[in-house]
Length: 123
Image: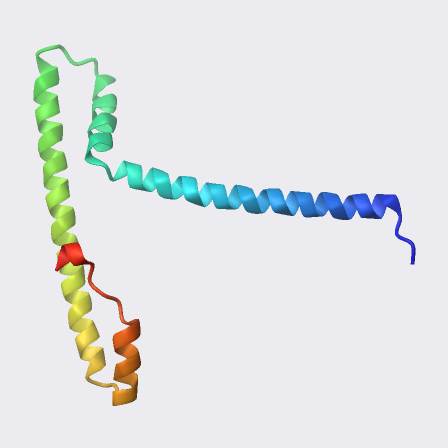
């Protein structure tokens, strides 16, 4: 069976489009992860908050007061995040222990291998 040039070109174009879509998807996911990590940085949070407050055109006397309030809020948010992570892992640890009581010895061996582990910085 002889394939026409038009059919071959159409197949190649379809493959090229699919490849480009795949690459675009991967780069989009990576860019989203980088942006998410950046927005969790306290320096970036302060910059973003001050950028919003700059729209109010604060006077030179107001600016240090606003910065101090933003710094206090960021410190409070970091503390809240740490507390929330500890509470989350306390709940998970309690649930994992309760699940383990209902398992057979064979299941317990597999469970100890696959169950989520608390990150070292939260121990």
